[in-house]
Length: 338
Image (cartoon, rainbow, N blue to C red):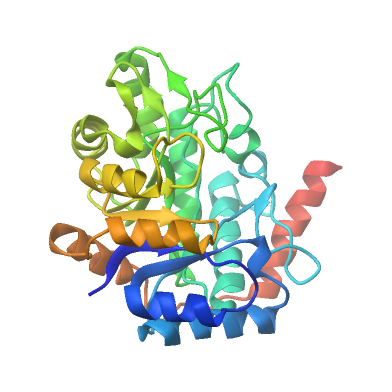
């Protein structure tokens, strides 16, 4: 049985305790952070070890590689990528902003696939507003839903063209949050009409994509008591119906301070609300054990969504000149800076 969970790990190598735990509970996937990364060869060995431990060659291995301040793979071993906001400004060589967003996604996919990483926690499809907390900030492509959706789709399609699954985040929107959900629970009091016209609209245009991550944000106009991650009302009426997203829905990190209760409570509440899979990132064995105890198997509609996600990328990739693509992106960035 595959557990409806994604887990992190403590360091750059799989410990005996972690290997035994993952072998026993069989999580659907894993997520890597900077603490898990030393060199290309080390990451390749780690992704191979993780898949061997659960006995699934296609087990999802995630990483946050957006570009800008959120990228776990960094120079000198990996190239730097621009912020989401920067892509909106790029032009040159007959290419427009969506072409460069696609190119960025395709280049990131090449980096990740080389390491055995097959899921990127990108693109960000949040629509920031003035006065919001900068936890999103320049990670967003723009301040209007249409541009955000256009560039997010381009990046997602670039990732998929390179064999890597994108995760749109943070559904149904983190752009209005006045606080960082890593540290506290944001409450958005905007009227429903405003949310539908902007925040939710960006995700509505991306609803056919295979994976999405929730926002730990309260939307008072929809459910004043629970953040989206643990709100059956938000997930059923907004994410699934209004936005129309029918792909695999995962929680944002359960260990973020926006959520309340112990890890068992958080996992149970997220799954009961309608998340298909829960995400736990910090690698704490004590916390992961509690999450696993509260999480059932990936089955029914959730299992079907998971299977569909894993088959959403091509098995045979179109030819791609990575060096030429990187040179083109770098030239556009240099022109922008000039």
